[in-house]
Length: 430
Image (tube, rainbow, N blue to C red; front, side, top):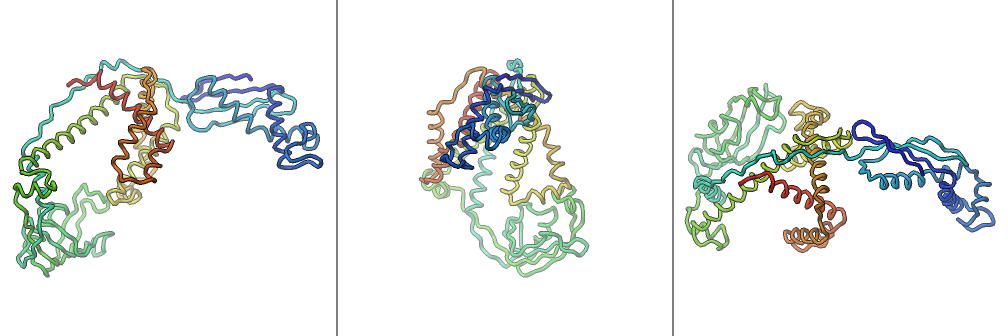
């Protein structure tokens, strides 16, 4: 078998393969057996008719046509293996020579993983900043805990800042109801400023049973572009006003929220401070990791990226956006409409970041291979054991986490983690 590899633009290669008639013979005999099995020849058991009989009955071209897929499949992957190519996606196959008793040849054009020359990573200088958690931050969490434990107490008095109000509202533009612009018995805590500016000011001073109409302008940067900066008419009816009675910030509160784990308020505050410290540390670590990888990409030299890699990353980013919006109760199509953009326009805007993400992945893989890092099956098993601790016993979850697909994902994730730890050691200073 003769194989020639020719480089093409954008990290593609053209693989030319040619087989002699002698090399083709095993494939042809296998194809003849299949034809014999599918179309039994009189006097022979299915699949047992001699090769010469099948050739005579159906013709050499029919047998060769039956063998083509098998020939290309096996020789293509052998050519990739012999030439140490890491291909991406499916190849484009073009037959060149295909005639009985003649050499058989084809060309396969396929994208390959681009090569990268790693730059001098010691030039990257990043530094961890000291993390300071203030008493004000801790106290803010305590106040949030008190609010969550607050008790509602209905009142006939007018609504004041800090009260919980339940109201009906309808919003109109030029007398026409806007989409999703109405609600019944909507709970609103005055002072949290969750509505557009000026809305709460019109609620304060009203009692249960009272109605009011007023006009407000939507903010200039409102997410729904068709409403941004525009005036709208509001009609509201107050159904209920309630005072929020907050528990005292004391030892009893600490015992209550911790299930008895903390006996004093000071112990609870200490735990809150430690958790805030860990959260801020995680944020800083993530920020430094992103900066590190982006700087490493800038210092390194890459071959042209295959279009398929960039397109796949764009689609991955789009799905991430869709998932994020879904968790907020939003829809991608409505989100795009609010931005007055098409999905294609959004994809074009995502392309520069997608390129960075692809380069980051290529660079991480190269570092992993150059330093001969390895993720063992035992390390994957240990990671799965830790993950299973986060779930109640469930055979379906265990089956999913131990599947080969998920094990491959974990192996890749652990490999990236090893690369990141290596980079941090040589780049980030305390």
